[in-house]
Image (cartoon, rainbow, N blue to C red):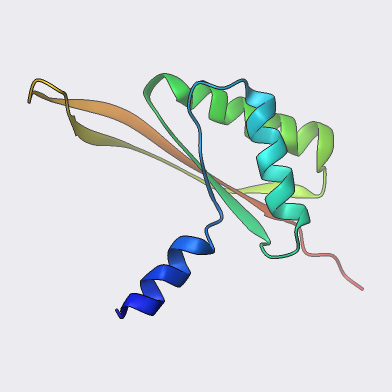
Length: 105
């Protein structure tokens, strides 16, 4: 992969990383990406305690604001993270893919 390809992938990201902000902040980000016209799907990623916020953001977006969006896939897993003191620990992770439904017409 050339430098130009890598840069393009990094700048055209449809991934939202969920942290400690309120779920509505992430709902706004999801809607901005989907309504921009650049993406037909968004991937919401979270680890550890942020998983519930990621699920909340996906469900609020799907049920309240973009009812023509659907949960395309959900992937769960475990990631190994190295702490500041050098110890390794396992952290749960989730990826939720929200996609706009295709309309006939």
